[in-house]
Image (cartoon, rainbow, N blue to C red):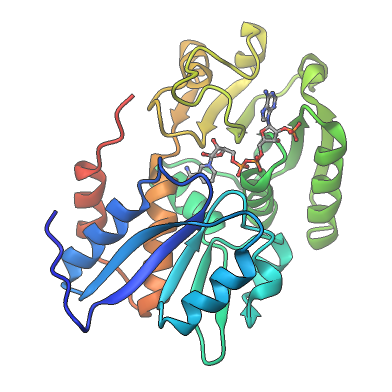
Length: 288
Ligand code: NAP
């Protein structure tokens, strides 16, 4: 992909550490080229104790917009001029838009996941949902499932206290949804229901593709749908086992694309044509 850079080229980027694996430059530069926007998107590997200086420096350098990834999605919040209501409720930001006197924070992970599920015809409303993991991605997934009125939400995590804290924080926002937390080791104590499971831990991600968060086949018999936020490999062992037990499966690639598209739309105040998104989906190469 050739990008023409001149004195008027606007600069966007991604803050994270580590950042070497990112696909975001490909996605955003693809969108810019498709829309004929004179801009470039680059990765910024941020030293762990320098986030404030980086944010101030990038704002002073006329950077137009940024994405934020691990480990800065929460710690970036104090350095923003303003924050969108949903991002404030979730307590995590993955998109910064240039405002008058500083950056404004947004969270496009929530609606990125929502759009990904919609495009795979996966329904949240009135479903019994399992969220596996209780980190940043689980926060977005749990908030989304509560907002879209899942019947029940059960968060399973290695560190049960983190699952309990997450359940409490989302329960305050959505008091009528039943949200519970259990240790991942207690998965066999789940009610005898059929679940939509959203796997949000990095277990099974390339290169450690032989790892799986729960190995027991009995667990997978309880899933009617399994979503894994991992996109490399395209079919984790978690998704393989779920599929073997007749569940509908979906990986994290569409979420990755949609959270980026939504960020791009926020920066430019536009709606991106579905044809461009489809062309991006068919062009991006992730590999296994
Ligand atoms: P995070 O905040 O670090 O959370 C990691 C979660 O995984 C925690 O709940 C942690 O449990 C659990 N975990 C980690 N190692 C474990 C192990 N050995 N055994 C059991 N549980 C373990 O990470 P994150 O930001 O939520 O990201 C998680 C995954 O989601 C990553 O693979 C990331 O690539 C993916 N993701 C994908 C997209 C997308 O667009 N597709 C977007 C966001 C994230 P403890 O609480 O016990 O430590």
